[in-house]
Amino acid sequence: ANPASLVTVLFHLGEMATATESLDEDTFQLLGAELGFKIQIVSPEDEDKEILEQFDVSFDVEDDPDDLVARPPVVTVMGHVDHGKTRLLDAIRHTKVVAGEAGGITQHIGAYQVEADLEGEKRAITFIDTPGHEAFTAMRARGAQVTDIAVLVVAADDGVMPQTIEALNHARAAEVPIVVAVNKVDKPEANPAKIRQQLTEFGLVAEEYGGDTMFVDVSAKTGLGIDKLLDAILLTADADLDLVANPDREARGVAIEANLDRGRGAVATVLVQNGTLRVGDAIVAGTAYGRVRAMFDENGESVEAAGPSRPVQVLGLTSVPRAGDNILVTEDDRTARQIAEKREAAQRNAMLAKTRKRISLEDFTKALEEGKVETLNLIIKGDVAGAVEALEESLLKIEVDDSVQLRIIHRGVGAITESDVSLATVDNAIVIGFNVRPDGKAREAAHKEGVDIRFYSVIYDAIDDIENALRGLLKPEY
Ligand code: GDP
Image (cartoon, rainbow, N blue to C red; front, side, top):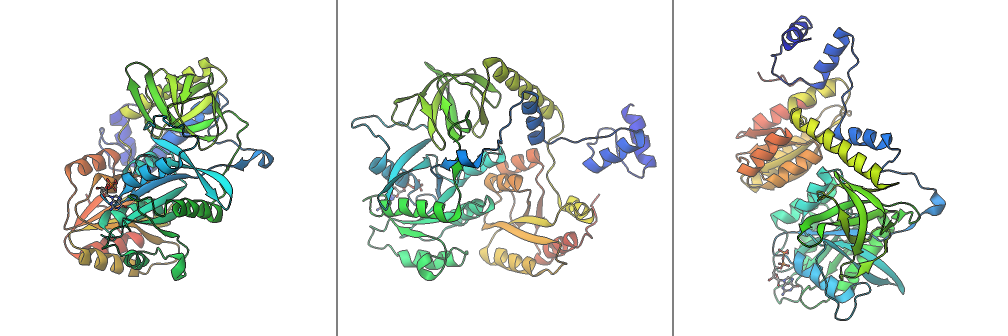
């Protein structure tokens, strides 16, 4: 069938379309049914699963519970700029590097492991060495959830700031438990009690105030409280998470950093998530493949085998993977190469196809009618705090029947940023801008990802639209 005849068929089905327009999933289904085809729409994630299935491998593997052993938690440090994330990561690393050779040169490979001592038991913790929620959410957008626990750093001489809340919301959206590090307590003007007080308003209540979040006073400068912070991370892991893996199987992991090194070729830092990665293994990392020629740890020392939660630099890939790409060990080189090639072909096809469409407010109404969704995720940005709060409060007061839920996953003052758009992408949220606009990068990203950004300057207009969407009444604008 040519485009013109398809348009005619659609017209008879009551759908207006032009030959160059991209159609939504439902219209495709309708068209398929009319023409006698069964149309199957495959997401990139499913497509990748299918490719792997062809080679009899899978990223998610079931392990026999008897084979599972505890693995170290993987931690990302987040917080407002200048609150001490980088210095804290340095302080932790210098006090506690595992097997740190005296005089060994520490290298930034993207993550490192330290050893803590909890009640006499030595236990490892893995820290992602790139602080901030941007990298964290960018990896989630690739489908990689590497972080088990977020450490939220708040400077005790400054207090809760916009990026503190942003980081908090990103961690929450990923359902990652939070430990609060109240930093810079060495400063005379530090007021750690104020931080606890302020964060209560955002639902993080310290244990000593009857809540269930661990707050630890630290100084990245003097090293005070670092041991307690490590204990708090382990205690939170033990209380909230069941971190186990099977070291006796072929490795599965994620690339957290990668670059092309002039002398060594493609270098990727791999965080092993399950199994054990060994020198000599055939691997595929996204569309890169190869054989592990050598591995190095954060001290630049050669490693033969890396078990669960262990970050290692891997040499031997034919090209550079992207941060967030998954890593799989395959039976042989040939399989690794073939998977990489299939993925590359799939990516080319996806590029040719239209940009991925995220949910829009109109789609939501439609999906709601069909019982396909029950939660509308929103991100609110506004020019002043009062307006953002007022809007949030009014939106949360909208009463609709129990089957629909409104979730405000992030709110903040200021322009709509790329980080807002990436959160919207990952959690399929709609962005509401109240008297604010996106910056250039955010506009570009929203366009590319098909994120719906709606602008309002009157609170009631915003409330009306959301209320109508929640009631399934919003009429598409043409
Ligand atoms: P980041 O932007 O969150 O990574 O913050 P940095 O780690 O770069 O720290 C910002 C500034 O605060 C630097 O000048 C640090 O030396 C300083 N700083 C960080 N932690 C502490 C601390 O515990 N005490 C004091 N007095 N200064 C600190």
